[in-house]
Length: 98
Image (tube, rainbow, N blue to C red):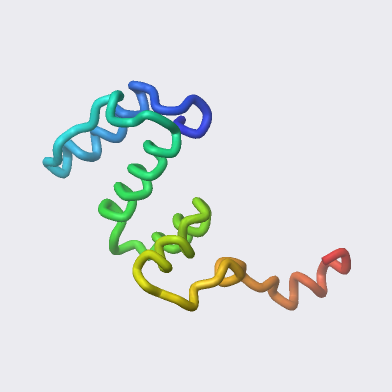
């Protein structure tokens, strides 16, 4: 919803359902000035809500933030190519156009 329409009351209400269940303060529409602000907040909520599911790395790669966050933590050897997975050999063999 955020990616299509930006911050709207409906998307904030859905986010607040999760926060209320966790007994956390709720957000107002005015807390988010842009799509990016809400996207960053959603990414943080996912970190808290799904901490044990092991999907954080993929969320960060999808949002293009894995390397930036690693470098912010002091990881000096984090490079952009580290977010790309190799194509399996059986897929290369099955499709000669690769």
